[in-house]
Amino acid sequence: MLDRSLNPAPPPTFFRQDDQTVEWRISPGLTPYPETVAFMEKRAADIAASRAGELVWLVEHPPLYTAGISSKSTDLLDPARFPVFESGRGGQYTYHGPGQRIAYVMLDLSRRQKDVRAFVAALEHWLIAALARFNVEAFLRPGCVGVWIERKSPGFHRVDKIAALGVKLRHWVSFHGVSLNVEPDLSHYGGIVPCGQTTTGVTSLVDLGLPITLDEVDDALKIAFVEIFGPVRPVDAPG
Image 1: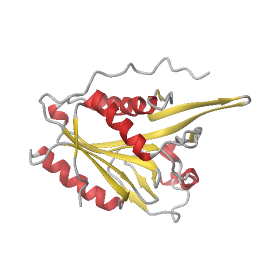
Image 2: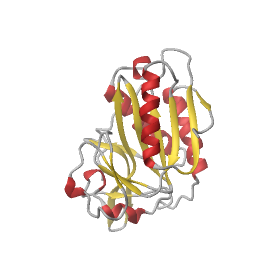
Image 3: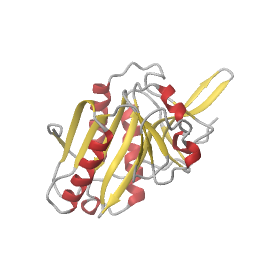
């Protein structure tokens, strides 16, 4: 039996100190990774300079691998399989692709809490709360960033990762964000050691037998986000 006794309690809300809402954008189709990074860099700078408001941007990417600042070259098992992008986010190698919901989170922590650990915990619990809406009991693992589920059947037991997290802060503004596996091709993870984990697996909602759509996941993410971070307002995706 997996010991979850060290899981932190749900964090307090991570609301802004004023009444400003967060822009909530969803881009259809597959968004190129370099385009998202360029947009986030500019938007984070504009938020820090009070030229733009906070934003959560939901996208899908074509198949690719990204390398976080803690990546090890030996964890890239098949470098020719998909494009590989160096990323300034925290973490190690991860996969992005169709059927995976990416949420890029651009928030101004100077107007919330200047507490990086509390922010990461809030993001993790946001994912856990969203998954709970589908009766998925997700949890944290001490010493491991991300969100996990336990799989058990007669003669079988494994802990699988269902959501990853990697953020960067500049002038107390966050960018990059989280990824939640809805229905990606899980075989695509075979080209890397995901997040440096060699003793766990990777799963998705559909892999768990839950035929949930991206639209349904987006609704769950929005509801859970509002509960932890405060109100949002839908806006058009960047052109």
